[in-house]
Length: 161
Image (spheres, rainbow, N blue to C red):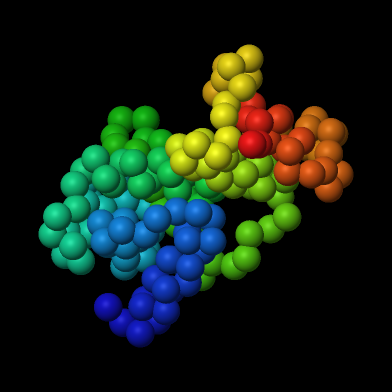
């Protein structure tokens, strides 16, 4: 791996960690493969390239990691009409996450799900179906300006303990 690629990998790892993602060896290998390959590739190609960095990487890990990156808006998905879906990182040198309310809501939702696993919050039963719906993208849709975390959690179907 070149010095520039190594620097880009460190930057992407930091970005992923800042969004609450756990960086395991297979995930790091997939990220390195995506940086190394540059343009969009299918999951099998990414798996083969990732195995050069970490031999124990599995196809399931590739798909789960790609899904998580997509949910956080870090990758672009290119659907092929008669072929495999291709993925690529949005940019080679990540910059700070913008103030996008949609991105913030996705990050908070991910954070609350992690807190739920640890038992610090509970999902409100009436809101569970709403979680499958897309997160609102406008400030007026979620009716907050700088609202407290409790209001955001409630919008996402959680109650903070």
